[in-house]
Image (cartoon, rainbow, N blue to C red):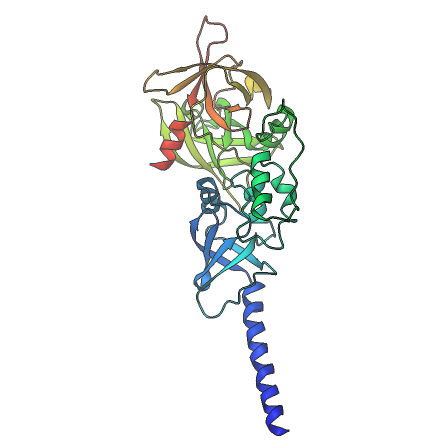
Amino acid sequence: MKKRSIIFFLITISMMFFCCGRVSFDRKLHTVTEIIDGNTIKVDRGVYIHLIGIENTNQGKRFLNEYVLKNKVRIKYDSRKREIVRGHSGEIWAYVATYDRISINAELLKRSFASIDTKYLNDSLEAFNNYSQGLSYTSQKKIINKHSGQNNIKPKPTNSNEPSVKKIRELADIVKDIEPAVFAVQTYDNDGNGIGYGTGFFISNKGLGVSNYHVFEGGSKWYVKTIDDNVFQVEEIIAQSNYHDYIIFQVKNNGSFFEYLKLGNKIPNKGDDIFVLGNPKGLESTLTRGVVSAIRSEKTKNDFIQIDAAISHGSSGSPVLNMNGLVIGIATLKQLECENCNYALNIQLIIEALNN
C-alpha cells in the first residue's frame, strides 16, 4: 500500500511539472527575436512558432519584420496540436497576438499578405472562415478537396459570367480604408514661416512616410496632419532624391500604430484605372479618378507614369493607386498647356531606395 502511494505521488508531481512547463510558456509575453519566413517566427528561449493557417509569402515576411520583430507577443496553442515546450528550444504551431491582443495570424489574412494554409490547421478552420472568404473560388475549392469530408469553408456560388478571382471592392470602401494613411504636409523655414504645402502617405505602421522632395525643399521643420487631425513632426529624413523628386522620412512615434498603404510590385498597364487621394489647394482628402495614359522614361527607364487624373498645387506627394488599393506612383507634376497631362513617379523607385 505504501509503495502504491509513493508511485501515485511521483506521478502527480511529474504531471504538475509537465503542465506548469506548458502554462509558463503559453501565458507569458515573449519577445520576437527573429523572423524566419512569412509564417514562422522565433521567440526568446529559442522556440520556433509556426503561425497556424498562414501561407508562407514574402509579403507576410515583410509584415512580420516590420510589425512583429522585437515586439512582445502572446502565444496560444492549437488545442489539437499542443506541443509542450521544455527547456530553451523546440517548435510549435500556434496563434500569435500582440501584447494588446491583436491577432497576427488574422492580420496577415485580412491584409491579403497571405492565403489560408490548412496543413497544420486542425480546430481553427472555422475560426478563420470569415477571413478566408476573400480567397478566390478556386483557392477555396482546393482547400475543401485537401480535407475530404470537411466543409467548414464553402465556396461562394458563382455564375458563368463571373470570373473566379478575388472580388474587387467598391472604390468608396477602398478610400475609407486608405484615408487614415494619407496626410497633409506643411513646410516651415527657420523663422517659422510656412513655405510649402503638399501631401504624403505612410508606408509602414511605425510612421515611415513618403512625399515629393520639392514639398520639403528649403524647409527646416516639417509637420504632417492626418485626416483625424493628429499632427506629427518629421523627425528624420531617411532618403531623398532631387533628381527623381522623392523623399522618405520618419515622423516622431510615441508608440502609435499608423495606418499605411501597401506598395504595388509591378508597373501598371496603359489603360488601367487609377485614383489619387490628396490635398489640392488645401482641400483635404480630395479624390480624383482617371487612367494610366502612358509609361514614360523621363530620366531613367519607366520612371514616370502619365495619368489623366486631375492634380493641382497641394496634390504633390499624393498616392496614385490602382483599384486594388495598391500605390503605383506618387503624384509629382503636371505639364503646362496640356490638358490632363499629369505625371506620377513610379513607386518602384521608392521600393528600390528602401532596399538599398
